[in-house]
Image (cartoon, one colour):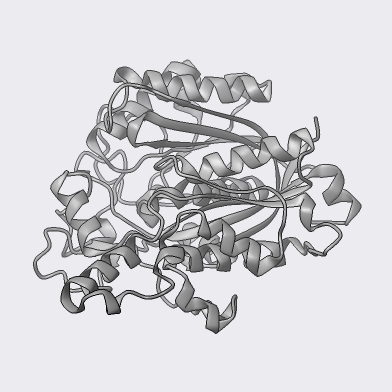
Length: 413
């Protein structure tokens, strides 16, 4: 089995565009949550979200192609181009079939669907774009990345709720590890901020509606005043590459991927197994895949969406796996700053873990003003922290009991 490393990073997120901007924002503890500007929210219970701002897609793709894509595909293409440029990975006719794309995505072209149905109801069939079908097709996020970059290797989309982005990175690790590909562009993308999605999440009480006047305070994992997540959008892509291939071309290496596990709790469409049992099983399986012990983990980036049940459940799962050591592991809840990017969230948090290992700095959990007594671990409140780290774990848990955990190792040359 080949060793697998991360050699490129790219992202389009509410907290910044490009890996450097995303990381700098985390180190500053800045929130990317604000008032919704994409549509009229006067009749909505929730009026805040993590919108992407300042995005100029024509910087990364031909302007004539933009009308053929939903925003989820535009974000994915831009993030992938950034990652390839960051990795200095040359894609040629000779190597293109050894390079692939794995994209995590939850809802495809949801925004285009809403806008098109609205126009159809108002104006009839002639209002429907000839590019409508391809714009909303879930697989066309990965497909558009491949077209833009000329990548002809394995190409598919993983739709596994909020675990999708980390699943894509983990499955890319498997492909490269077994020799099916030399490099995979892997990550996630979603663009779900539209009137029906906001209303649906609000009516199901999944998102918070309590902080419309203070959006930067809305996402507060592990805090006693949390009452739901904040919906966000964006994309993050990583270049996942075989170590021998990366060394042969003199690539810069950010970190090594050493473990991954995924599984289903098979319990409920939204609620997790009690007492963190599902989360614990996934983390334990990831440790076993990496050949590591609980004592080897120096940092955790938690799924931590800011929901009353979910944050307690993940805390219980961490305690079940790590025992007393759980209290000594610095745990970051970066959704406190970014909100929940759904299919892209696991990829964004993998980026944070990779940068944490590279810089030996742990991102903060902001808005942790009044810790929940049931959430009593070290969540790195308010400010980043310098920590000596060799291995870090990241979790992504989704609706329907979809779980994923990944483990990264600091690159030591």
